[in-house]
Length: 398
Image (cartoon, rainbow, N blue to C red; front, side, top):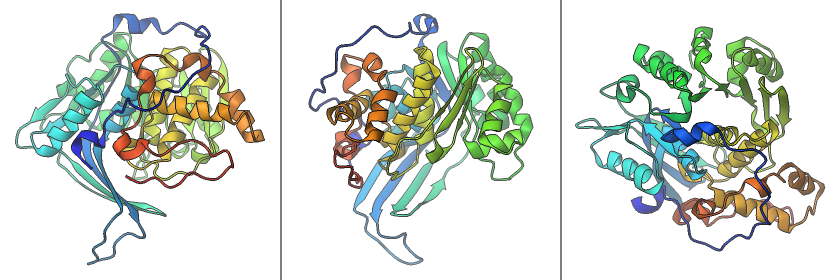
């Protein structure tokens, strides 16, 4: 796979006709009119090298040939690419080495994916972290190498840019010292809606003091395991209610069981089922979900539409290998919707999807962003769409 196409955004391909557009159900968030960015984020960028098509993962001393390989920026780049492909003006603060890996990740994000890197920095004699992933039909294994960046994220960011929204990893800001925590507080003080996430705690401590940062946040989006552990609750529903006591928008994702959400400002509470799909690689699915929630929130969609849209974007992502490579653009979403409409509800399940996603007629954009798709040289040549005969789509390859 060449560097120019590994993480690129393709705009070619047949035009997908859409039904006549009706007026948007609600005006976009006024914050976007007076900000430099729609969404800002900070974290670690890795060069991801993904080997696919393995019958099994190699044993000690064994050399194997894979049928596919992809290279792309990973880590926080998964989230940045997902947001940018959905049309958000996206800014990222991250450290990049002055090596070839850093060159590749920087150019892919800045030139191909349109991510604003003005708060990112290149560091001489510091190499970009690298992750190698090997995926077979059952699981994947990863090896990562890297070193802490020369300066912490708080120092790198300084005063955060004026942005309608920001996405923060509470674990990273909590462990990053006072300056790392301060940027989230300063973002809120200037009117930014902060969407928080928090990863799995391998120590098993699940330190609740991390949640103190939620006082600066508009939304919290953990998965069910994390949500129950940090809130000391027994079910995802109870965890949702505990989180709703801490932030205006509480969301708990629960894998194949879907997602729960509660908006305390509007009083909306929803439970959205996951789409039926064959997951090939879950890498980056949570990032895609989060980026889609930000899109719907800034556009002031009803809560059920926001969570349904996020679930759709995540479902489209897991059908392909590759983290940021798999993040869908509006073109991929339009393709899925056009194909679903073409079968006219051939099954009861498809008819339910037509009802659930009818709002897409109002929100699928026109213009260049509507053609944004995954890079054709890697992933986009394979269809995300459910086959009319109900057969599963073929496995993805790169």
